[in-house]
Length: 231
Image (cartoon, rainbow, N blue to C red; front, side, top):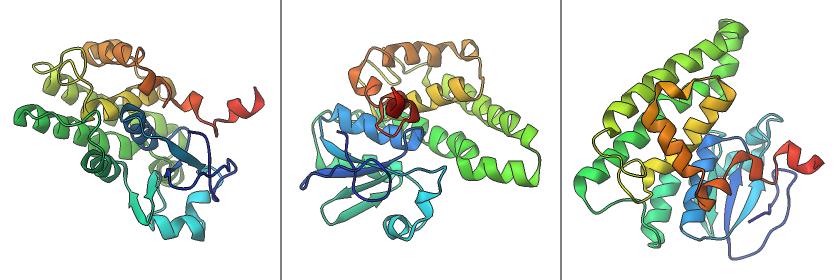
């Protein structure tokens, strides 16, 4: 899984493999890493250092003009945005489907994923936090994230309470779980959210901790994690 091909400083490339442009601490990239692991798909890892601004290099902007990770390259096909990537993987690779056949469960998965991708995560990404720091105050960054995270987590608790089993929408890992796991982990570890306020999500987090596909996608396990280069 380790590898690269140009943008960052982790550089090993194998041809005829999926290529994922990723940043170790990106929750959006983590969603895709989980899905690739669940589906058993090997891939080359191309590190994009967001703190160094590598996402704004001409090379990367050709892949995603918005300058965000993740980006998936599959031969001549380039897909950016984690939601689009996950749908692409779901359509092309049928092993371990992420979407249940049941239409109601499928709709719940889409709703949960959208709460994360539109109602929580955008308010904590680097661009938003830099803007808050510059235009408002550095002291407002954490409260800003906490407000939106608590609002989203409250909605998720209500949405999932009648549908959750061992995982978000039943006893099988589905699309919603790939969005929830990185979000719960990131907010609780980086932004000091007390997850005991959200017992269902806390229980899901414990379940995810037992799954290799999720653990291998964790920020700490990525080749561009600064601590991994010094250990």
